[in-house]
Image (cartoon, rainbow, N blue to C red; front, side, top):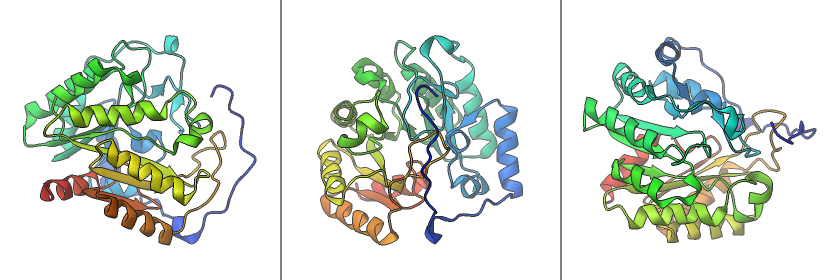
Length: 299
């Protein structure tokens, strides 16, 4: 975990942030399919609180490029590794993702990845191959990608854009002021540039981003961030509560009230986003199919 130390600060969760884990047959079935194909999901690796609900509805966000990340974002529980510690690329992974899509009978697929700064293209070609394999099953399947920043490499971005996903999502995660503490190996302006580039170089792809609250930001900073995302070409935005996944991660500064999330939703809609999801349990992939349908209907 690099230079991280266990957090001594803990905060008691309010009632609106308590969610039961449901052990349903559907959840077990989804896990069996994923295990049988040797696939990872961000649902499990990032300890998402919505995992039981999504698995119950036979939905999962596929995590490609392995399950070890070359960056050390302090909010994330995914395992970390130095670039030289990760072994190559799983060439068969795109086909196995497509097989899982077939077995789960998915009509809307979300693909994300760890950040792989050790790869020349950051893993962009693996995103493209995965999209290609899924579309071989049925070109009517809608696909959303949630990508790293690829170090801002435009050739890598073109590789993903040319694979023609329906939605291109790249999360800014937090406000600019908090980047040195929350995302020390990322760059806020680079992430905005990624979103802007995708919007300017694709005609039929919706652009999406998301961020967490509860890390010490102010309301004014959130409104400023919403304006910056809209100016960068985002059609959709997701806003959710940061929850400290392990004692090694950065602590929660504040639990944001449902009323404040409603305020952010209203402001984002006023600013002009086609789709806004704002709530304590909202995550960038949560109910993503609904966001896509909403944007299609508003086009």
